[in-house]
Each structure stands twice: as structure tokens, then as C-alpha cells.
Amino acid sequence: MWDMGVMDGMPFDPGMPGTTTYTVTGTDANGCTDEATIDVTVTEEISITYVVTPETVFEDGEIDITVTGGVAPYTFDWDNDGTGDFDDTEDLTGLADALYTVVVNGSTGCSATEKIIVSTQASVGEFDQKAIAIYPNPTVDMITIEFEGTFVYELTDINEAIIAQATATDKEQVSMENVASGVYFVVIKANDTVQTVKVVKQ
Image (cartoon, rainbow, N blue to C red; front, side, top):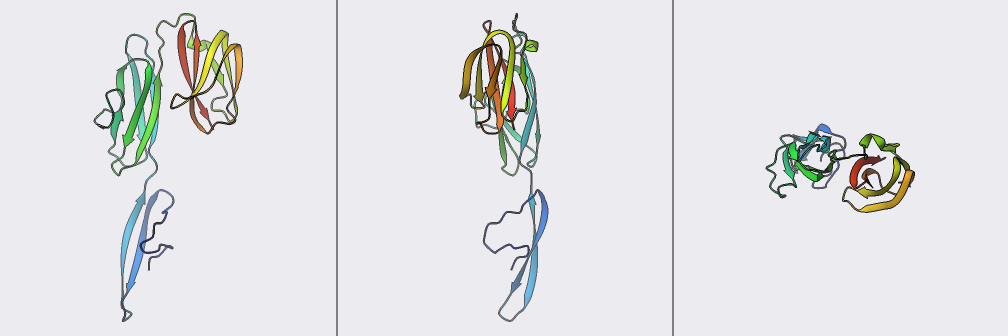
């Protein structure tokens, strides 16, 4: 008989992260008993945060990620040199503007994936990133895109599937009420230049 409601041979959910000691008592036909204990450690899910340095001249973008949760040491697999090898460095330098995907594995088998866009600030001309305003961000139902002049926008998910797209002038409101919580991207095209802004739906 196990304590804490555990049934022998049956799966159970240990609950919140941390280490818990479980005790099992064995009893034979004569009523003799003995006990044994085991520690079960639950770790938090792996979380990936990042800082991106945009490309300003040819292939000088950078991605600096920070990993928490899981159990270190971690291994990293970036998709810019093939996938499945898990022999990459944690951070990347010398990057062109593109979408990059990293998979992080913890030492106990936990895994997390993050898609990261490196944008470009090279030759932006009149299309200055400071002229773009997207708010509120994070949002719960609606975002407003402000950009002086006529522009084309696309709202995409992390897999680059287009959720909404249209042409607008100066200001446009876009509903996100019917999309799931998560990370999305607004791709704005104007003056033969493209700029991408990450938006979080709560």
C-alpha cells in the first residue's frame, strides 16, 4: 500500500514542481510489514526567452536565448544547419533576416521549441520601424496597426499560416478574438520593404 493516494502499478500525477517522498508498505501473510521510500522530482516545463539583434548589414543578425525549467545541461538544435543533430550552440550570430527554429532538450528528456524571426533594418529608407505602432501588445481581442501611408499587412501564426491579410492606410484594426492564445506575427509590407512585429495574444 502506497501513501498519498497512490495505487500500486497505476499512473498518477505528482502535481506541482518539487520533490516529494512516497512511502510503500508491504505486508506478508503473517502480518509482518516493511517499508520503503522513493523521491519523485517534478520539474517545470522548459521555457525559452530570447533577444534578437536585427540584421543591419549583410548577415550580422544575432539571437541570444535564455532557457529555464527542465533539467540542465541542455542541448540545442537550430534549423539553419539541418535538424536532428542537437550539436548546436545556444546562441546564433552572423544571421540573415529569416525565421529560425530552435529545439531545446533537457537532460531528462523534456523538450521545447521556439520560432524566432530576425528582421532587417538594412536599406529601410522611408519605412522606419519607429513609424510602426501596434497596440495593445499583449492583447486579448483586438490590435491596432498604425503606419503612415498605404501598407499591406498579414497576421500569421508561428507556422507562418496566414490568419488575416488586407491593404490599409494609416490605421487598421484587426480582430484576434477568435484565435488561440499564443505568439503571432504582423508582417507589414510597404515601399518594397518588409517589417515583422511579434504580437502576443493572451
